[in-house]
Image (tube, rainbow, N blue to C red; front, side, top):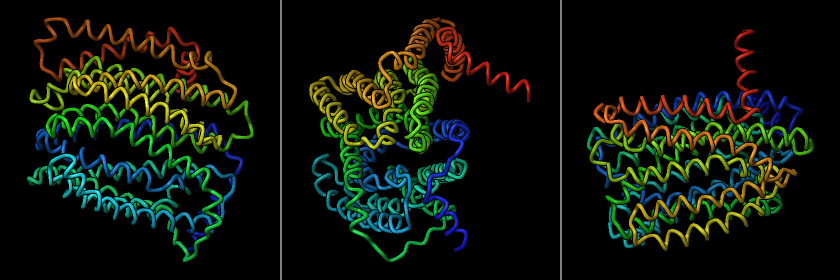
Length: 497
């Protein structure tokens, strides 16, 4: 208990941390985590795709339409409020904990109720059965709001690294074991529940917080303006990520949705495994520099450049290598998802490169402004998806890719909050996109070689990825002076060490 009190008290006040060093340490953990998670994702995808049917993925994707809404609304942004505030107190922690648990229980009950109309909407009773079990996730997830906020405020990125990666490893093993036992779509459900339970236990082991039986309506009301902004943005994010799933699942069925969702999930890994973890590092760092605008702007420019230089070529690479990637990971039975993956790879690069806007809005306490920009983006996406449904999954994926370009407008708005403009955006985005475009064309040219097409899918993929990486690295270093300086500085430190 003494350890718990000490850790909590240290998180109450934001100390004058060496933010730059903390961000670099956090980024280092995230990049190691990215590599580890990528290996796990590739391995588990290759195994599960051969143990399960496309329809199994489709059933879970249908259920996810409902569960993601509950998951995004579950915390009401309360954890982010605790991270953003300059100072917090124990009463806030207890109040937010009980508010989160109450909301988690309510959402779990709501998912059970929605499971019946969901079965009717998708025309399959299995969707409702899956939902009634997945509802437990929201109770489990609501418990860890305080430990996650405490670790984030104190920039304990190493601890978060071990928790998140231990969770994903054990969750993946649980899903594979269930799939090998013949549980079908339920194996994915088992993996999700196991992940939520393991994550909650590990967070409480890292921060042994014991909530007190007290609750302050005043504390909750004072944070409502910010929390409501997170609620609005979560609702819009839900529509952005699930409207296409609802339409494809209802119109084309579980098998078609399985192809569509699998292609989107793999490309969403670029944002989910790279951009969003980096966001988690940048948000507390940006919040700590609110009063130091010059350092704030310098950190934003550096972080935005490094993030775009990392994620843009991955998205373009997935697009250029979609055929070999599908053959290697999924097998020839999944070739229908190749054109969808090509388009989603390009749109994923945009989502990931502009993801820095979210921590900028949050750190400046302008979540409401972020909501207004996201609302326009959601309307654009909804119109595009509704108009493209008659052309099947390829038409919908093309519409989603085009509508994603609006994210650049939101990034510009976030940059303006700290007196950065279009020229600054071009400095961080233009070199990676230009270099990635050259890489895409060069990779496709290599793919068209007859000798390479006669090779196995894995060898073809390795050759194309290696060749594309060399082309991109050469081009981006040629086009970006700041990136050349970053690389030279790293090489210099390595040489000295």
